[in-house]
Image (cartoon, rainbow, N blue to C red; front, side, top):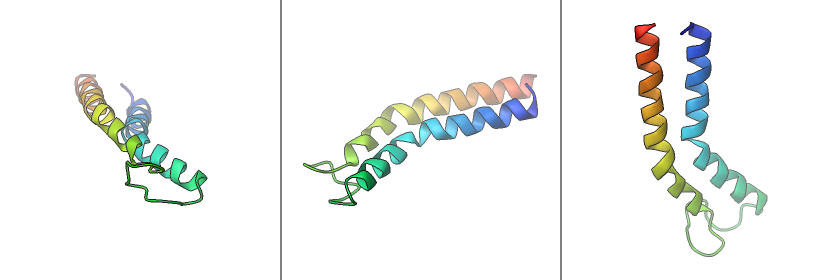
Length: 73
């Protein structure tokens, strides 16, 4: 795996891992910054953060796969 492909894959993985934070922030911004970014209640935007239960382990595993491929190649 070339260095350029390695860096691009790492950037894509970081975007995937932290996309729930981006979604929560954008939802909060489009609502006019009403309520809390971290609130899960009515009008809250924090429910997006629960997606990190999926994106963190999957992204971490993908990171390990990319790292092994880089070290072996």
